[in-house]
Length: 313
Ligand code: SF4
Image (cartoon, rainbow, N blue to C red; front, side, top):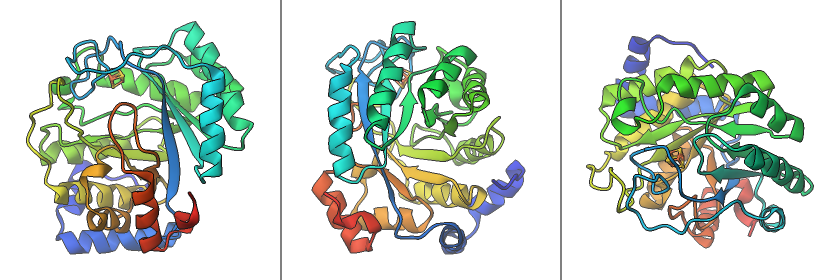
């Protein structure tokens, strides 16, 4: 990761668009094979009933969205998902559970999921809310490879989106995860009504995390009816591309995941995102509660791009 001050990041972000994309593409090419697009699968292991008030999320108790609540899935169900994902070429299973912080039972069950998934030769990632140091260490001992904990947006805009926890609370968990020796997955969501300065500040905040992220998900808001952000104005997609490219330049060897909202992009817009530095996607028809691109559409796109994973099913 290249450390830069906010003004230098702003200059990078605001340079002429084609120069920015060209610079990012060169860095991408120097550090990865352009045809290597990592495929991960997200599984909601516990859905809904979350006491946090994230304004974008249908799983918050504050949201009026209609979702099906689900308690923790049986281990056998998660293992069956992992087995089939492996056969389709997925590299990592990301387990998502709607908690402010996981209960002891949830940590115990997560350890069992990790064992079951790893039996099939897959990497594991979990996103279970805020962790204590002890919980992070327990998950590491069970074999967890990555922990996702997004900063979501800039420190300045954070309280417009979430009030039930602070930006610094997020940093505490990231610190516990890194200290336990788990790789950090940390990114955010664009298009929540933030300004361009917020997006630049969000990127800067990623560069000063207590541990450098090995994976950065960049999401575009999925406007779910019943959430507080359901009516927010659309993001200009050039802003999505500028964010991806600037992040690629600052994190040359980190996987950048084009995450939620990808189904709102055309094939060519997705191809531009990959050119600008994204090199990981969620594969599967559904994210936690939001829609995702159909599997056959992804395979067709990967084939058009000449990606290594295009032959998978
Ligand atoms: S984003 Fe996560 S923490 Fe926030 S309300 Fe949804 S499930 Fe809870």
